[in-house]
Image 1 (cartoon, helix red, strand yellow):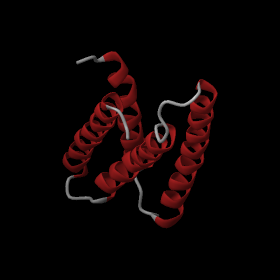
Image 2 (tube, helix red, strand yellow; image 1 turned 135 degrees about the horizontal axis):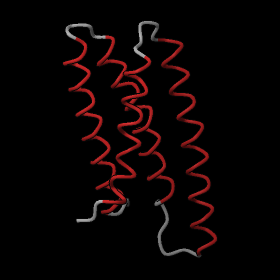
Image 3 (cartoon, rainbow, N blue to C red; image 1 turned 180 degrees about the vertical axis):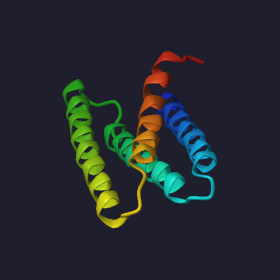
Amino acid sequence: MVNREVKRILRLQCTLVGVALLIGVVAGGGNLAIPVSVLLGGLSALVPALVYARIAYAKRHVAPAELMKAHFRAEAVKYVLTILLFGATLVFFKDLSIVGLFGGFFAAVSGYWFGLLIKN
């Protein structure tokens, strides 16, 4: 149901999280806290983005007002889910690298913006 452009941006986000994870593994020097933090940060952006895509693009060929409602609903769910994932990460994982957590998150989020700038 999700169109080709959205899939391309989601793949780019996954790729950038993978690169950030590789950097976290190298920077961690055997300490698993950094790569785990990067992964959790990336997932805190990727999972809500996937949910957004599913909700926003569930219906096709409907009135513009319905499309806008779907996108607003998807954005609200994405926002709440992002907060819940960050909250759960901070509550359940005590040995986190905050730099790694936000590095993974920003790597995934930057994939969206790079995806808009890079056209195939």
